[in-house]
Amino acid sequence: MPPAAIYQSQTISPSSHQYSLTQIIGIWALAAGPMGLLAWVVYPALAPATRIRPEIFLWILMLVGQLWLTVLSLLILYSEEGTLRLSSLRSRIWWQQPRVSGKNETRKFVWLWIIPLIIASVVNVAFVGPILRKVWTSFLPMLAQPSGFSIESLFSTPIVGNRSMILIGLAVLQLICTYFLGEGLLFRGVLLPKMQRVFGKLDWPANGLLYAAFHLHKPWAILSAIPGGILYAEATRDHRCAWLGAIAHSMEGLFLFFLILESIA
Image (tube, rainbow, N blue to C red; front, side, top):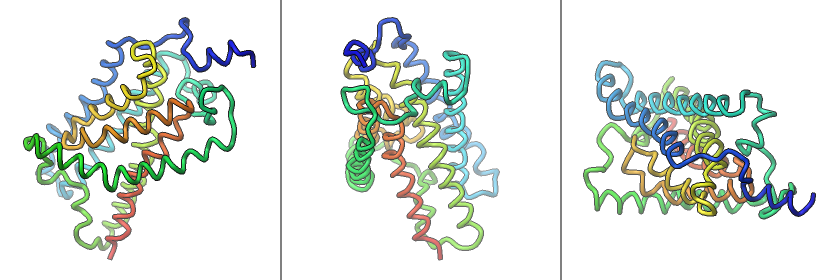
């Protein structure tokens, strides 16, 4: 490949359509707004009238929100590309083989980057995130997690009967609908490839901060979402492969999945 072509593949061509700041904020609002409404309006209004345990009902609502993010992503992509064929969208949303950093070349060894990414993600989920969440809510106690909003509380007692299958099903849906579709598709597939015009070389940290600010549905996690959001965006942007960010991000879901398995009586 000629050097000029390699350069254009790394730096957004002026002729390619990039989002304006207004478009970026608008897409963010269309994602964050409904999630916030589901958590702070729909959940308190409907949870008392259902026979479903409140934490499970909230989990279902959050999955509905992730499905909305997927639909929103597909609507945006169709309006831009005129098609939803995966073969036509791979390069647009970076659902492709990872590239060597700084080059438009695919090499199998690049997949090895997933190992340090997974380790960093696990450290973030298990150690960094809880510390930042505690610091965040100590300074802003009004943002502390209310009673009934902790999905993890479902696993404080042994899980018996059919409920174990329900929770495993929800965990599997979360792995798919949140990390590979939903948040993953919208932030690192739809938005990230189109943010360079506004943010230049800082498009990936800007994407990570935008992802953290998206958590209006659980504001106690906004600060703790920043390291992960930046990590996933950097891996995706550097290798122009959304799969790297999605796999690293899915460690959060696997952590929850293992909590369920440990709690099954």
